[in-house]
Length: 365
Image (cartoon, rainbow, N blue to C red; front, side, top):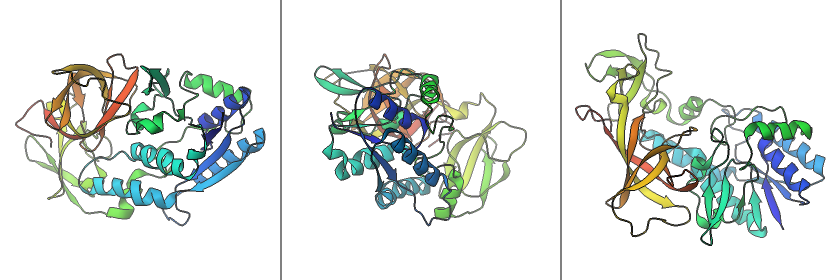
C-alpha cells in the first residue's frame, strides 16, 4: 500500500508515522508550508514545526518533502476568512483549509500518486452500504470531524485516520514510549496556518481598527467603545472590557460599526433554538433522500465535545435545525455540522445563515 502522511511536526501526526511504520509500511512524508516567510505577523513556530517533522523523518529513515502552498492558501482560504469577517460574519478557516488545501491542492500536487493520505486528525472512515463515510473519533474531546465536514466523497474515500480509535492520552503515551521528538510538545492552537499568532493581530493586519460604540441591547445605553466590529463574534464574552458583567455580544450592526451586548449568563438574547443553513454539503451522500418532515439528528455549531440533539428540516433550498436545547451564541458564518442520531457518522455541513432568537423583540441577525 502506497501511503502519504501529512506531517505537521506535532505529536499527533508523528504518532501516525510511528504506527504506520510499526505495521510495516514505509510512508512518504509531506510537510505543507502555508505561512509566508516575510509576513510581519507570523511567528517562528513554522520553523520549529519543520524541524520536528524533519527529526521524525530521520528517526524512521523516511523521505520528507516540503510542499509550498502558501499562495494557494492566501488566494483561497485567507481571502475567504477576511471577506467573511469584513461582512460581520464568523468564518472557520480550518474547515476551508482542510477542504481546499490539505485535501484539495495537496491531492493535485502529490496525493494523487498515493493510495491513501494519512493525517493526525481525530476522526475515522467507516465503510457502510458499500460507501465510505466520515466517522467520529473515540475521543469526544479531540474529535475533529467538525473541521472536516466540508470535504467531499473523493477526499474522504482516500483518507486514513490512524488516531480515530485512540484517546489523546494514549497517543501521548505512545509518543513518550517511542521517544518521539515531539512527544512532549504542546498541542497547537489557533487557525491552521498562523501557529501561535493572535487572531486579532491577523484581522487587524487586513482590516485595521475603527472605534465604535458598545450598546446594551435592551436599554440602548452606551457602555463603552470597541476597535471594530470585525474583532467580535456573536456569543463572545471575553475581551469586551466592560465591568459589572458578564456581558455577551448578541448582535452586530456592520453599517454603523456598533456592537450590541446583553448582561447575564441567562439573558435570553444570547440564546436561540433554531438556525438556518445555506449551501448545505453532504460528504458522501444524503442518507435521508426522499424522507419528508423532521429528521432526528445530532449537530454542532462550534468545536466542542458535545453533540446536541435536534431535528433537521428542509428549508427552501437549504436546511434548518431545531435544537432540543437552548443554543448559546449562534454565529452566522460558522458551519452547522450535522451527524446521524447516534453521533457516529458526520453527514455534512452548511454555513449558518441566521438564527431565530428566543425573544423576537431583539432579533440577533
